[in-house]
Amino acid sequence: MPPSFDVRLDDLAAAREELRSATSDSSVICSEAPAGALFPQGQEPEIVPHGATFFIETFGCQMNAHDSEKVAGVLLGRGYRQVDDLDSAKVVFYNTCSIREKAAQKVFSRLGEYRKHPGHGKIIGVLGCVAQQEGEEIFERAPWVSLVCGSASYSKLPALLAQLEAGNRRVTGLDTDTDETFETEITRRDNPVRAYLTIIEGCDKSCSYCVVPYTRGPERSRSSASVLQEVRKLADAGYSEIQLLGQTVNSYRDPTPRRLSFSELLVAVAGVPGIRRVRFTTSHPRDFTRDIVEAIDAVPALCDHVHLPVQSGSTRILRSMQRTYTREEYLEKIALIRAARRPISVTSDIIVGFPGETEQDLAETLSLLDAAQYDGVFAFQYSPRPNTASLQMADTISEQEKGRRLAVVQDRQREIQVVRNNELVGQTFEVLVDGASRRPGQWAGRTSSNRILNFSSPHSDLLGQYIQVRVTRASPNSLVGEQVI
Image 1 (cartoon, rainbow, N blue to C red):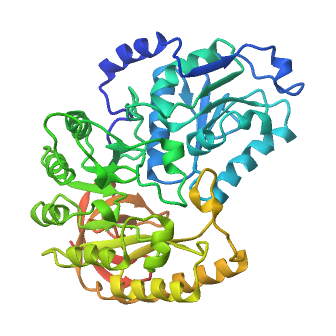
Image 2: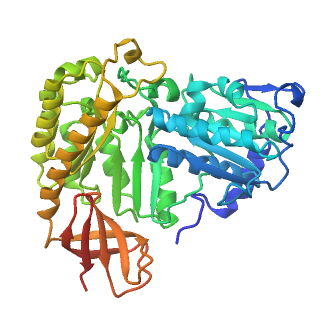
Image 3: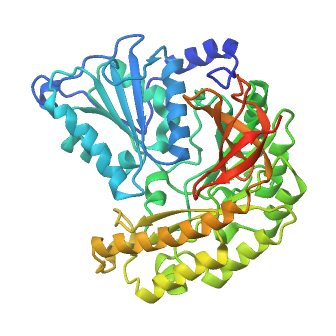
């Protein structure tokens, strides 16, 4: 099993010393007012002791999960100790998502629990997109919070933590005006077989419903040399599957004189010795080009799966969403993928109930499902988000009607997946085993096309192995099979 860190242990001491030397930064705002002026009586947090325990709860997508790995790495590098339960943690961080309204509500629900337990004595921090979105207003809503830090400031966490350790009661890192990506010196790896790696941060697309440009800032790409250096370290540590991340991952632009395109970077990552699979998410249709498909066709290590969000099947709604493409242009991208020599799985995102969406617009979305034949869809009800252009649009669709439309889309997509998955029965796939059932002899893994395959095997100790599995049964959301002996 690979080690928890993606750096060698002899590098850790030097990195820890460098982290401890961090003191202040122009983007760090601290308050040294008396604790009683900021916190209700009995809720003043103590100074963080050396070797304190910490707990992180993560909301949201794979990028948020990877961000939590970065935060954990910084904390571990400073001598903190991670625990698996909230009660035994001295420091509690909530890494948040604000893409959907319900996700943001969950965070404030968590924070509200501390009002019932004024003697908790914990250091509470809010990280991520909700932190960036709400800023210092979080202190007003939850005065027991000590740290508010957006994802663009994770590289500054050593300085922020130093301020907490010194007894400062309110510390913020909310700067998005930076050319830096959000990498940290040390990243803890929570998955023993698959490693996430961010290659681009932020977004320049300005979709009218999306808060990402506000919470994560403009697009900034990492240098190809930095990406490949980290991939080599991961391969040396035993990781064989890499997932490249970005809000619009295929908008990657190498900032160095080498000027690798996204497809060229994919090929270079796949060429690193020890790497057997390379995934990437999430792609934007505007920047999805033929050379990406050609790279997948030419390089077996590039997984045959593309996540290509469409959001709506109606050109009229796409224009209102400011999605920069029409229905016809999107379907041209699907045609590129379907024309590949390898069968490539395609998944997507869809929003229903966007302001002004009519029954005709919904019908066009349903017909696009039929045309695209997705292998999976993440469908959501529209929810207005702060600092987005859609807030100015009249949202006349009731929540009940949004729910009905969502069910219609999900039912249609379920029908498509039943047919597509049943076509796979009898076929054999290579599976990277990443889970074990409580039942003896039962395992789970993913195919190159990112399909979940639950299977039986007489063997033990299969975690992290690549094995051949024959599909014997299919359901709408997964496959069932048996190891080919």
